[in-house]
Every structure is written in structure tokens, then in C-alpha cells.
Length: 158
Image 1: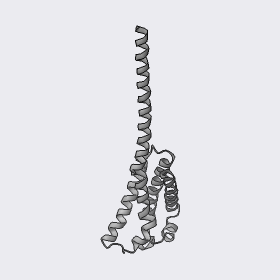
Image 2: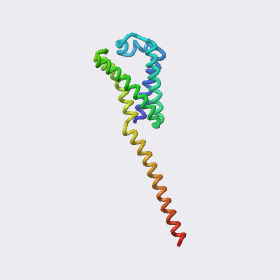
Image 3: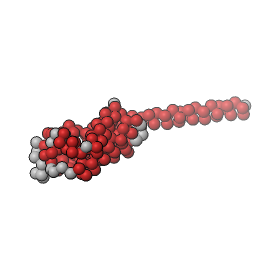
Image 4: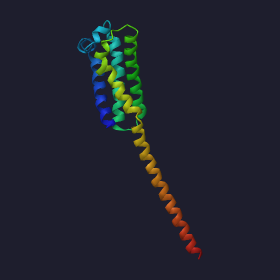
């Protein structure tokens, strides 16, 4: 389930980032609430677009192989810090509180999903359980082989 959510989030982040890189002015006027946050700056929009592309690629890598947890954690960290900036600006009065309602689905929800994906104990538990199960099986095989070896030696000595 986490891999599926990671894949969906990866596509959404990458599409947003590519839109920001390719057409920053169009992105600025198209995305609800953005134009109310300050004057347009194409360079700034592209900078953030680049970060969104990297976050999308990191989550796509995690969706493809759950061993890329560090990549997903880096993506989650960027998204969480970006959301924190929005929350801080609202708390400090630099943005209107109703802006958070607009930001909810696009700025506040993605980091929550990414944190769930990247730091989930269930995700680690599943990986750990699989590894633990493999180690137990290998250990059991080794113990059985050693016991059989002892029995063979005991019979040969008779």
C-alpha cells in the first residue's frame, strides 16, 4: 500500500515540479492561492519546482524499491519543512489563516503522506519481519545441519 501511495504522490510532485520549471508564470496564476502569497518571481518558482522534481523522483525510487527508504525520508523532510514554512507564516500573521485551508491538499497533506510512507513502523516492521524470518530460516537450517553432522559422526565412531 505504501508503495502505491508513494507512486501516486511521486507523480503528483513531479508533474507539479515540471510545471513550475517549464511555465512558472502559468503555474503562478493557475494554482489556487499562490498569487496571494506574494509577487511573482520566476527564478524562485523554478527553484521550488526543482525541489519538487527531486522529491517526486525520490518517492518514485521508493515506490520501485522499498530499500530506498532514505530517499523517501529526504523527500518527506523537504515536504515537511515546506509545510512548516506555510504554517509559520500563518502563525506569525504574514499570511491569512484561511490560506491554510487552500494549502491543505497541496502543501499540508503531501508531507503527512510522505512521513507515513517513509517513517512508518509498519513499513519497517514488514521489512524487518521479512529479514528476521529469513535469518531464522537460515539459522534453523544451520542448526539442523549441525545436528545431522553430530549424528553422522556419532554413528561413524561406533
